[in-house]
Image 1: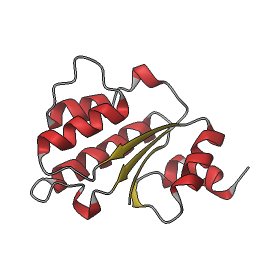
Image 2 (image 1 turned 90 degrees about the vertical axis):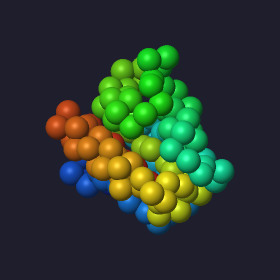
Image 3 (image 1 turned 90 degrees about the horizontal axis):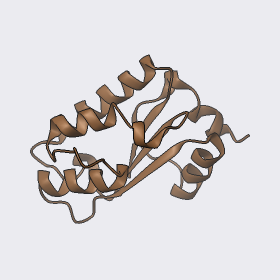
Length: 130
């Protein structure tokens, strides 16, 4: 078992981080851990609507997804359609603001809340941006 795989399984370390390894290494460790990895390309995101659409696509959100921040928070705290021992959300090419210069703090808080919720359930939930 790789060191990264071991760290991914550590619920206490789970959080929101800038990725400091290759995406391939992360994917391999997530697969080895049995985790679901949600991969979102934010390169063209310039609005809240585009951000929410990209995240909904990445997590394969159900039909009830409302394309607003409340729906994103609800979906990230549910994930019943993708049961796994842990989750990794990879946010590619969104920079430090996830493509949301005016609302990145709201998105960041939603991610932090999802991490906290899943910790309370004994499951690691990781968010990596690169």
